[in-house]
Length: 191
Image (cartoon, rainbow, N blue to C red; front, side, top):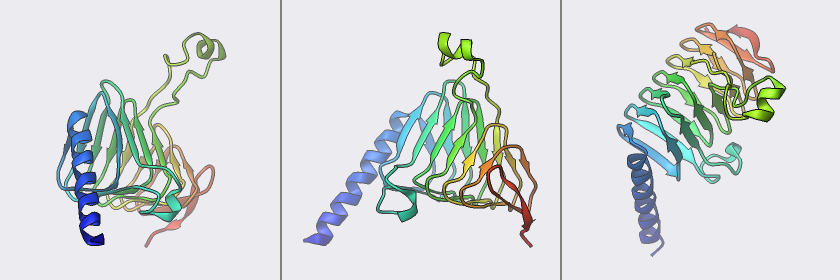
């Protein structure tokens, strides 16, 4: 009986996630979503095959009580490569985010290509949702981003780089290097 209930539950989750992705016009290959993914797409989202997204507090204990979410604003583009892994993390794309192949994003990470609000105080009070700055984010192939890290607008992370847990990343991280901290700083080469 338990097995039948579990099978029914997973089939229901699959149907819900597939419906959410199709309603939001997400182009995707084989995709395993564990839990319910929150999606709001006004731009373009493409997820290459063999992605796994954990979106449930029971799937990754360090992910906290959050679900994974993907928000893409009008005119923005989110491109995710094959063999992508993400746990209970958020991607907010106002311009462009490109994620390479074989990328792993640890629990409770945040990837934002925008400031969300203008920096000028008078602009914030007059038009808090207009005039904010955006810059594209590029994450190379074979990158690992440790849990609770924040990747800010304009960041470029080179192939094979590792970002330590709890890091705040802005700027360019060269390929094959480990960076960690707030702000993220060079630790050592990966090889």
